[in-house]
Length: 139
Image 1 (tube, rainbow, N blue to C red):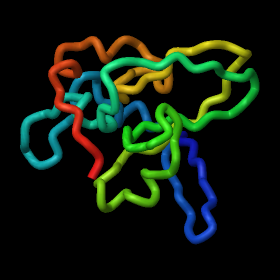
Image 2 (image 1 turned 90 degrees about the vertical axis):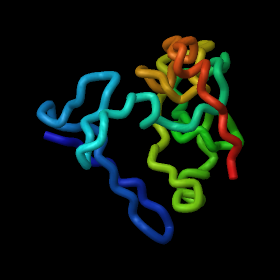
Image 3 (image 1 turned 60 degrees about the vertical axis):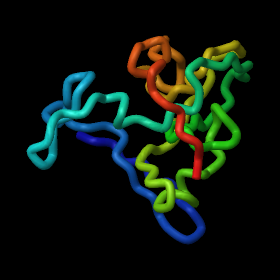
Image 4 (image 1 turned 180 degrees about the vertical axis):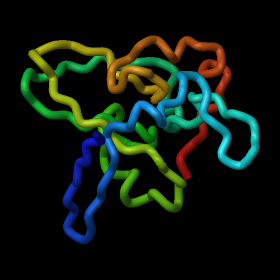
């Protein structure tokens, strides 16, 4: 059974699916083609590469954070709402990730937006395809 989370905004409701059924799971690294085209690599389906490194951040235990997954926030690694207000102009499909720090700690948060363990860095920025990618400037 899927869990829905509704984010209430002043002018509209935003609903998103947080979990998917096991039947719709696609193996890591590829995505099924939708129109007969070739499968695309998973990293191309994630957010814009903001930087090819991680950032160490002091997190306060019990506090909720909103990690930017689209890569366009000017307040990296945290969300500033750019995905809402510039969604159509920038063609943003990603949503931010809510997380709560389990205790006071220093954590490495991902800036390349390609991690498989969001919001934490898993070293994906060291992969060849990420290092060779051109960092596009926001429009």
